[in-house]
View 1: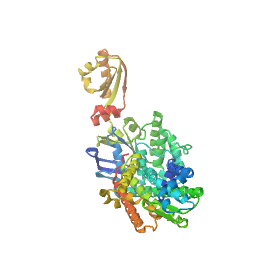
View 2 (view 1 turned 45 degrees about the vertical axis):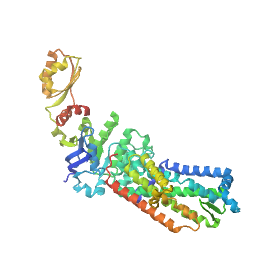
View 3 (view 1 turned 90 degrees about the vertical axis):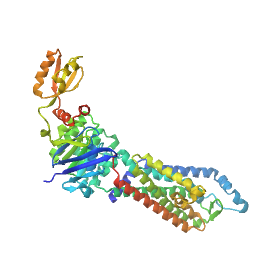
View 4 (view 1 turned 60 degrees about the vertical axis):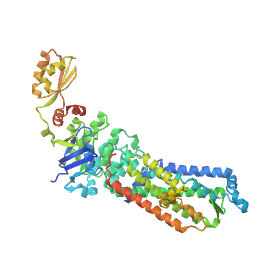
Length: 279
Length: 310
């Protein structure tokens, strides 16, 4: 298993397109940071229009913590896509390129192959989130400095003191790893059904977009199923920037995401174990 | 000694199409076993079942006396295979591909062994090149290197000469013969090309529309009394009419205004020649084509498709 995992990681990180994801994260982060450097103050004034009438807010409001929060929200759709690019390619890409049949003529079990694909996708996801954390948080702090963070919500705003922020980002990035692992598991499941690489990537994004819309639409018909959709919970990291932190809701989100991940993975193994390899 | 491979009543359908129908055969140690059939006859499906890529609906596969389904992983250690094209990771070097796939067969495989197999297949010195830069022949040879790296008893090679130029075909053919003769490998090699299999195999299995039509030692299969005779003549518009009104018409496999192909005993060729000359047809040449073609035509009993295959 360790050998198989090493081989999977070697293949992922020797493939040039793997690094496109890291490049995209870096590019989006830079664009937002540059925009905030040039127009950040007017953006903050506009966002705080209503608040400024009732409160006198002073200090470095446009700080690295706030910029990082804005970047994370902007990347909500992009990161799943980047995860799907690798995880969705894991089985279907091998089938498409014809290497799956060579792999499976070797004395390895299909269960171990799926697990190696999943764990390598997980490691890729962890590295991508760590890269995001590094580029977004560290660089934003260098460019914009520290300060208390204002979290503007639809019906309230939360002021978080700068000494109380770093652990929240740590927890948020850990939560993001779990959420993106669920996306990776979904991509691998769709990848097992397909024999071309692009299908699972598009299907994953299709599922994420449709379910995200259902999670966000305030319609009674969706309210019944919303609590059970994984897309309702992948944004649970925002809870760490509330005061007080809604631990019960975050724990529920963690459990649901873990259940989805296990279900996606289990279904992949069941299906892939019986699949005729005709590609 | 138990046969290295024993297949019994293997059957596989895809929806309503029966790809392999009640197929049984046995391969003994040290044989080069030709697996012959037209495109779509069920060769690849059978080979994929032998490797656990496709699951049969019924039937059994035993390797060295062990049931495949009960010991798949263990038995795959004693098999090396190329199925259809030898597709690998184009962005990696030949060496990386060899190392990856060979390690999956035997985690303790040494670099020395990998260099040995590169030497055998004639790729030493080119192993650092990217796989995508390899020619088709080099890809096939790397595929064979991967198949034999862990020193398996049985090699399963599905159409290993597909897509190669004549020189590449000859090289791969020589390599397969050498692997059997010099390295003691048992080889199951499939092809839709009669002359290819004929030049490599010691035994043969022929399938047609998923069913076995014949198997056995090559010498036993061929009928020396029946071969394909190709006659080249000067253009003759009346040839078709002449043939149909004579006894020769029944022996004719195909004809144009300039060529006749007949399935017949070579002893009566002079008689045919005399008849053509008496009917004012100038004979340019008479030659015997592969005797195995005649055999293939006989057993498949389907001249149209057989002509396509040859």
